[in-house]
Image (cartoon, rainbow, N blue to C red; front, side):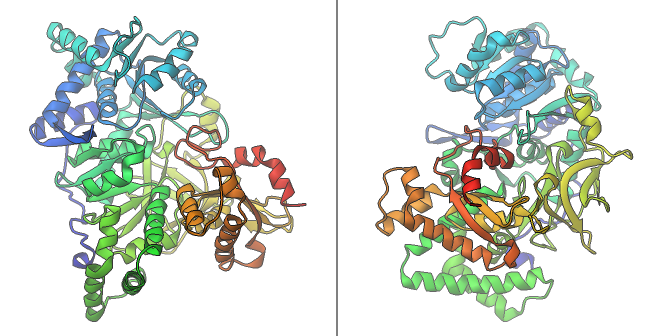
Amino acid sequence: MSNLWNAVKIEPRNELVLEGDTVPVMFWNAVRLRGPKVWMRQKELGLWRSWTWDEAGRIVRELGGGLMALGLQPRDTASILANTRAEWVWADLAVLSAGGVSNGIYPTDAPSQVQFLCEDSGTSILFVEDEEQLDKALEVRERLPRLRRIVVMDMEGLRDLADPMVLSFDALRQLGREYNAQHPQELDRRVQACKPGELAILVYTSGTTGKPKGAMHSHGALVYITRAYNPLLPQDESDERMCFLPLCHIAERIAGEYFPLYTGSRVNFVENPETVPENIREIQPTVFFAVPRVWEKFYSAVMIGLRESTKLQQAIYAWSIRVGGRIADRVLAGKPVPGALKLQFLVARALALDNVRKLIGIHRARFLLTGAAPISPELIRWYLSLGLPMLEAWGMTETCGASSCVPPGRIKPGTIGPAGAHNQMRVDPATGEIQVKGPNVFMGYLNQPEKTAESFTTDGWFRTGDVGGVDEDGYFRITDRMKDIIITAGGKNITPSELENELKFSPYITDAVIIGDKKPYLTAIIMIDQENVEKYAQDHDVPFSNYASLTRAREVQDLIQGEIDRVNARFARVEQIKRFFLLDTQLSAEDEELTPTMKLKRKLVERKYAPQIDAMYQ
């Protein structure tokens, strides 16, 4: 099947070994090994700029020297408040090389959240991206007595700033060059002094149920999980990756920074979060990891574009995707694909499917990877029908990335695959909770020993809070979060994520929250996809003046009702959604209703929109 799917190099490259038992040792070994080869690319002002391993090493050495000149001591914490960009990685590696603890902060966080995270982590040096992020730091710095200096990556608009606490990225590098000239061995000494058991990074949870908790990960755990990724998702120096998800999230930190560091694959940084669709078409990554919302947006764009195409083009696509679907069904069932069907698929690719892949920017991809949230099995089948295996991985902040992953040779949509060889997974027979044990599991929550103790069983297994099961092949399935399970007034247990995933498969729905605990029936709070719904309204002469009026339009209400009817048809009557309302505010990551990874916070949404929810039950 490898020729059919273009899935070459799927087998693990077990000969790939990069020495080092801490992240900084591994990084400097990589620099020495790969020196003049290109490691990073970033688009700036419309042009792609490249950095070799040697150049990245020089920048990290200068930044590390600068941090030491500013007084950063081993085990001191430095935080990074920035979007995903090359400077983020350099700052992270410089902090670790200097023996410090690195902590990431979401660039969408409000000043009060920045204050809490800096205070809780004991941040002494704060990297900020630009003037916008600097303003947040300056607003709260008087309440952060341990904060000594603020380093700005992009000084646009700040050239005349004269603040003794603030210095530019370039100024820190210059300070490092001077320090390293006077202390040429100090950075290397600190790198070698790092121990695998020492704290390396803090990754704060998204805070959906309270204040974020700082998960502590050691150098040893980071190296361990990074090495473990290659048997699961093999890559090498010929691979192109795109790095665009938040690096303060454990998924991109491991998959987008440390794993490419280990494998040597090239990392491409997008211009900004809004240019992802354009940049992916330019980069054409060979391996692409994204969260379900990104995969849903790509699918929606194709569906909307298809509605604007000619009848002939629609007919060609319909035939081609049916052929791909027939192959996908056989592959998923573990059955051989007849030669005649393979030939039809080659024709289907030439006529339509390759154009869809190129439109998205995934034409060169060997496989696609999804994680960090549940995804609709139908979406996985659709990408498979294009000829692209989509592998679902599962993990948590506390498990330091993926604990399980669906293998390319046996895809089962709706599952998260078997446990990776690097850790153990089990289902608690009493509660159905999935639990994990292994060297990748975190050290505990910073400053919260009680929460840490609550997170482990008496025999040392981490309580994930996810409910699920495992089949005869060892494939795990997540049904929902324990705290999200709905028990209706009639006593029916409902897993809302399954309904929510089906709703999000619609090009007109971005997110949904199912309501119904202790209620007589299910209802839904829905966030529409603004771009696609606006396009629908324009095409059907639906008048609207703003986002709120768009959600109130009868035609839009009917459109969403039609999408709900489609989903309801797949579920038993007791599991069907009876009523819904549309959020009339256009939400972004800055809004309290959304996590930094753009997921609706269930409990907060239920509290904030309690009157609207009550109205659906009157």
